[in-house]
Amino acid sequence: MNAIILITDIIEKVVLLLLVGLSIWSITIMIDRKRILKSLISEDFFLNMQKMISEKNLLFQKKSESNFFIDAFKSAELNSDQFKKTNSIDRSISSYIKDKRSNLEKGLPVLATLGANAPFIGLFGTVLGIIRSFAYLGTQSGSTAVMTGVSQALYATAVGLLVAIPAVVAYNNFSNQIKRAIQRTESLRDQLIAQIEK
Image (cartoon, rainbow, N blue to C red):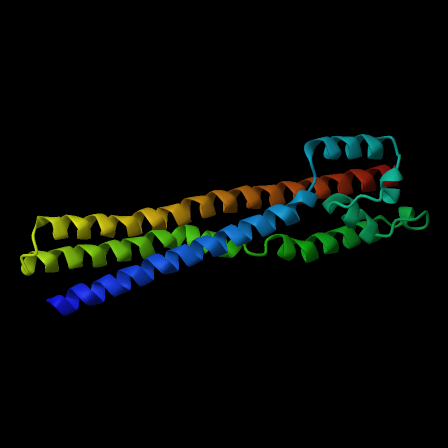
């Protein structure tokens, strides 16, 4: 009986350490994605670009700032000869989007996996804590030891949820930002091509 108490106690502590490590990993990914996704398109910038394109004002090519839209259009290396080659512009920008998408989404599968599985890891720790509590009952250690075992068991579930919830929120937020930036870039590309073909 004492062996069960010792083994479950050690494994439960390993589970808690694992959850803390996963939490640190998750926070690291969130900070990195936040920094990378700063260069995506803001609402004001998108509206400004729509206006510039509709007025056939292509000064955005000379902008020194860097964001997803400007970098995509600079990758097409627009010049007066290429304005007649809308297929070239379309292919260049589409290729840029495909190439950069994987870089933008780096780390997001980890956040999704943590969001889906961290509660189960925490639940495993809880089950071990409850097994230990029942082992305390078998050794007649008293109600204090049993209650301590149950409360420690619930910590694992709480930590699992603390890892999972921010990971899911961050995953959804970052995915939506990337999706919106790609849609806006494709919209501006189509608008530019339509203006060139007029």
